Length: 360
Image 1 (tube, rainbow, N blue to C red):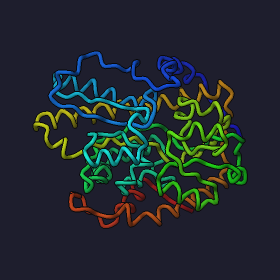
Image 2 (spheres, helix red, strand yellow):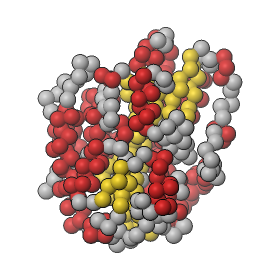
Image 3 (cartoon, helix red, strand yellow):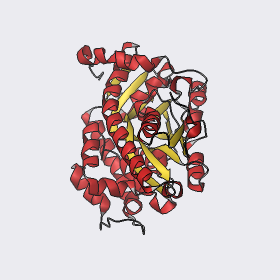
Image 4 (cartoon, rainbow, N blue to C red):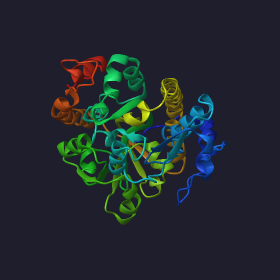
């Protein structure tokens, strides 16, 4: 069925998104986000990458961190932020980060598992799959801090997260049930958890780096995206995909990670300020993201994109299929490393119980 949208409150919020709406250009440019200060005098420089578009609040966080760091450190740290996949695809950039060629990254949760399998927890279907559940997960510092240690053994520290909405399907044909979904060639990220989920369901996943998506979509190599409505609208994917099916099976996150060796070379006072800035900015951006998703859905609907929901029977079928990912990746998510301060016997079970995860 087509989901009904309530435009009363949401319509007013469209103005918020419009301010940045014209910033999207065919050729990526950082002109709209230049710093209002001269960074040449900084004692410390931190190059940070992101794959996506800074109109997305969760991506824009990098610029907000840059400006707040400059302010609170009185010009001692300059965070040179590179969104738009300017430094390459995520797997490639993760390798640069580990080697120390760059110092930080706002990595998507789907790609983060390549160096931190525990990060796959957030991709598990129907576990942390709403803004409310995400807030609840973050509030449990014992569980959340253990999650953020996922890459510590790789020499990479995780500090905090921002988001980009709830995952579903953007498609070139209507998808109102499972049978129609099986006709779609879905692009999925380079993430094992997502690929397993799609194969378990009998769908047609096509693994592809995000920068390759626009051409593949226009050429018909793929006919659907496993992504969020916010990202699909802002990055113009709805110009080709005219339909969106709500699944809300996972939250899309950007995990803000940094090279530990670089961070440890900072003076202790700057380390403290750095962490405080990242935490403060991320908390603020997560609240903005909740509004932005509603805004972008309303804008897409107004522009003719049709939104669907699956029947409860189909959703239950997906939940049961998705549980295979929980079982398959439990050993990887539960694996402990020397640097882990919290050492649970069954971390995934603790999170499942805390989040109220059940499969009938």
